[in-house]
Image 1 (cartoon, rainbow, N blue to C red):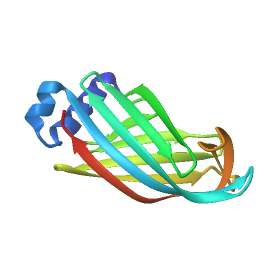
Image 2 (image 1 turned 90 degrees about the horizontal axis):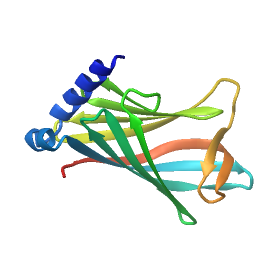
Image 3 (image 1 turned 30 degrees about the vertical axis):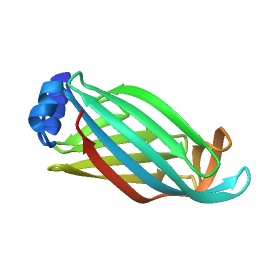
Image 4 (image 1 turned 180 degrees about the vertical axis):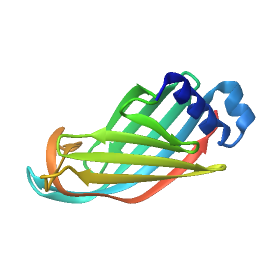
Amino acid sequence: MTKNTRIWLLGALILFLPSRAGFAQQGVTQIHVVFQNYYERVRPGYAAGVVSEDMTVVLSGKNSVQEVYTSSNRQASQTWNTENALGSERWRVAGPNKLVRTTRRSQSVRTDTIEVHGSTCTATARFDLLPGFSEYEIYSIGLHAPAYYRQARMETSTCEIKSN
């Protein structure tokens, strides 16, 4: 995808969002997503439960995606701040109203999809094992290290579009 195509698609996505004039003037769109994901860790040590994953995505007219991502459970919490180019391996536009975030790990791929429907949005998280693997290797916020999981799945999500 060329740079001009990515910029056009970002512009198209922003035009589909609410308060079009406000977003166009400011050139910034914020999407807030909260995933409730279930993880079953099998090593080291067994643990299972729901992790709240709070993500704020900031789209700008500069073809960039800023992301503030906080994972938390009863035992721990951790926040990451990243910035990537739209159209990079991490973030891409998959249509005039769809953003896709891909996280590739050694044994699996996580795909987060945000779809805009007028002034609302929906978000899904999908976890897929790579061929030949039966466990997900995912960073554990409780252990502060990679761990191995038998299950990783989205339970629920919320999504809202915020104006500045």
